[in-house]
Image (cartoon, rainbow, N blue to C red; front, side, top):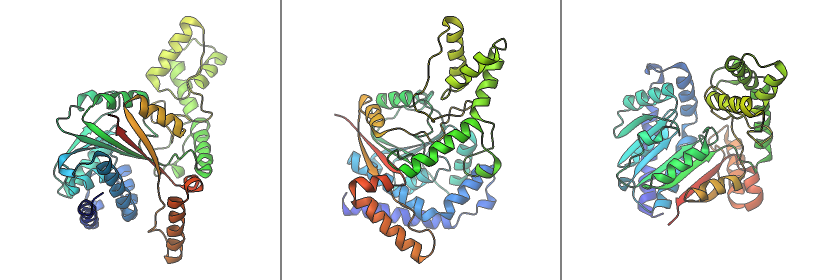
Length: 349
């Protein structure tokens, strides 16, 4: 990466930081949940600006192009801050995509409050990407903390394969399968979501409280086929872990026709919201990602993330800085301590 581009990105990060300093969240007429999440991001804005800057640097490094030569797609934009940093950086156009209309509207209103130009906001999932994916110039796609939630990754990457103008992909995911602490934490989360549900106290950054996913599937199946006896109902509800409503109904219909009850998912705890299809921090092995990227025309490189070096007092910051240096420079154990990973994709020739 040349010095002028690094300077350009560092300068954009500083200007974006100053813009966020001026943002009055209380004045934004957005829903409470996106507002709560935005406050969290702003409270840790130095860390997130570092993260978003690193994502943009990686995308530009992979593509070998300048920002003004590229369209930036921020997939799963959430509160939209990465997309906004892209606009400040000087990408020719920024497309901010999210499946949630509430978050998308909040991101749009936040961008307007900051007088952001050049951002197009699109509501989309992997199932209707063909409605907006026509790109006339080279593009790069970023996704922070979204790949572990996308319902149908196979379809998503198939769509990306056909968007020939997309030259580079960079995703971040906290679902680092090599980190035993994260793996244990998320497996406990999966089991709670699946068997108990989410309550108010543990949903502050994860949305509304909900019943267990297992009970939701059971209710869906009962509504779809009310004549099923309880034993078959329970078996079907268990077997359809990892499916949302329309696919649950297809699974049940197939069972009704041929009497065969297969399994949807081999992972012992991964589960998704049956209403939305959003996975609960899905864990996938790097080999699975490698296969997914490769068969859809992208080379994959996995790199290590970093801890928030702005957290806490001076002593804690020194400890975190030291830990980040260990994560960065120690190959094997560094990955096992990395708090998240970058999944970097380059389109194959």
